[in-house]
Amino acid sequence: MLAIGLMSGTSLDGVDAALIETDGEAQVRALAFRTEPYSDSARAELAEATTLALTFDRPRASPPIVAAGELIVRTHAMVVQKLLRDAGVEAAAVDVIGFHGQTVAHRPDRGWTWQIGDGQALADATGIVTISDFRSADVAAGGQGAPLIPIYHAALAADLEKPVAILNLGGVANITWIGRDGALVAFDTGPANGLIDHWMEAQTGQRYDADGALAAAGRVDPTVLDMMMDNAWFDLAPPKSLDRNDFTLQSARGLSAADGAATLTAFTARTVARALDHLPERPRRLLVAGGGRHNATMLAMIAAEAGLTPEPTDALGWDGDALEAQGFAYMAVRRLEERPISFPGTTGVPQAMTGGVIHHPAGA
Ligand SMILES: Nc1ncnc2c1ncn2[C@@H]1O[C@H](COP(=O)(O)OP(=O)(O)OP(=O)(O)O)[C@@H](O)[C@H]1O
Ligand SMILES: CC(=O)N[C@H]1[C@@H]2OC[C@@H](O2)[C@@H](O)[C@@H]1O[C@H](C)C(=O)O
Image (tube, rainbow, N blue to C red; front, side):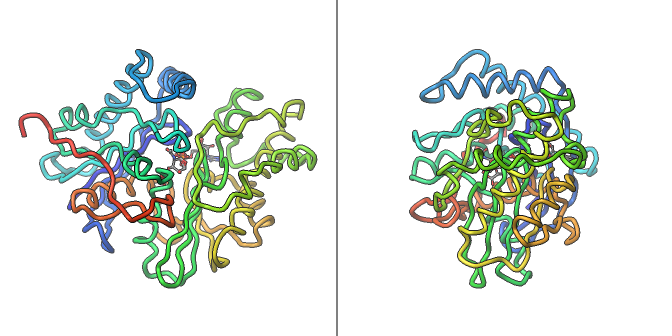
């Protein structure tokens, strides 16, 4: 099948869109990828929606969040058109879209997770069958609803020596471990770039610490780092997942811009090292995807803390910026075929299950 995957991640940097050809099993061919950055005003609107959503005890239609959802659909419909144009493919040739939407709040402990962006509206706008709301069925069944990407990681890594681990350094970090027998263990490990981005914005007005240059110029404050690590969440055995706002900058206040960047980057590295302790067996390789793989300081700190050299997935021919979007395309195909996307070892759901709601375009 030809499938498009659309991901708007926790960093709120933009919409990632990927076109792949896949059988929903071992075969995956990446055909096209692009990112549509959000404007500053769109980013602000989405950030406000997430702040508001977190104050709710359950998802409910609130005008600013409804408006943010419409913004999500408009942006995603536009990026689908651009992706199709890049690829020289007609909408009619595409079998399905996997539409993650934007997580505004993730509260599996309260029995819900909330991704905005109406799947029916996107199906109608594009004329393509669209799968949305990938996480809710898993949470309703008692799972964490995240991470979901492990089944895609497993497909990509089919021919690699095991055990192997794939680390995504997005706003939040998550790890997938694949054992010799194909067993999957996956969970969120802590913040990746989210806190650093907030720190950079507040301290320097820049959106992120390009290449980790500011962190490289600072010194890690060991007391602040210890304070940040002093959190029982890191001792918790998987399955576990995070909301992008579960950690704050509180402990770093008062540090210089560079020392804060260094300390927050070291925090990400140490939480990754700590996550490796929860794996059944040490992986032979640590492959790394997501925007954080461009941060040389972060990668060096992970190497030092974890004793494993993180290898960007790009060296294997897997575009580290595209994996999440490709993953939702892959999961959309699996949804159509009723194949599982979440597992006891990945989200903690009692039994492997599929997920996502199918929307057929109006008039189709
Ligand atoms: N050149 C770079 N140097 C340092 N950091 C970078 C660079 N490029 C991207 N990043 C970081 O990567 C982040 C975006 O990563 P990515 O797109 O993987 O996150 P996301 O998909 O939004 O998040 P999540 O995976 O949590 O949903 C940026 O916010 C920035 O912090
Ligand atoms: C609730 C939610 O949107 N979680 C995201 C987030 O971003 C990274 C990490 O936290 C991961 O658990 C998940 O996304 C990826 C794509 C996943 O589900 O695998």
